[in-house]
Image (tube, rainbow, N blue to C red):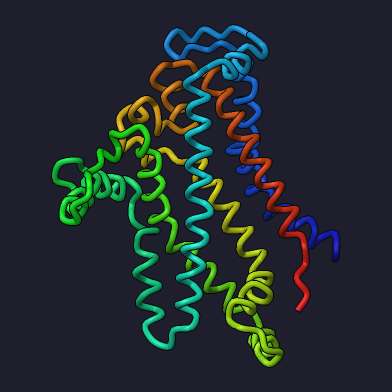
Length: 290
């Protein structure tokens, strides 16, 4: 009977495993083999070049700038969105009324098309009649070119990314806060702990798995940023200051037709995301004892 059940289990799992193999595993190996070749999409000529594409990556100033931009975006979006979403989640967790309404309002940007979001914020950032510059003029402050300014453009993109992700993180933090037993906070309160002490020594440690999960998921999403760059800036922004790794991969492979070089950029991005995922597994494996 046990063998029969196992056979049925394998039979049900097999189609999903086969689909995963065909859609994820095989393309990954094909992409790696492609990164070792010089492959022009137009001429269809394939020449094995070994690690030449990777050596070119190290010396490519545009790729280095894309990597720096991606890291700046991640270093800005992830911590700021975590702090803001946790703050809003704490406020909503203490609220007695309107929690569902505010949760819906915050979550609305998450389900809004990223392309629509990009166009809306492009109008807000418009140098001459955009809302933000009109507000700056009203306050008597100097205006900004935002997306046209090399020093500001990447942070303007980061602000949009934070706004887009905030609702998702608030909902997850709320779920995490509601799983923390109330008696821990009450016991700390009886012992004389103030609100800040209860937060830093009781609530935050118990939220550790939630924080790590959101940090890793948020980082992976930021590393995959493409649509906002494509919609809001032209060709990676001024002086390539908003060009990200994913945008560079798309441009290299499908506009410059250098499939091999684009594949090598993809491998670099994959290894970075893999390292972050392994970190997530390691940290989340720690058990929290109540």
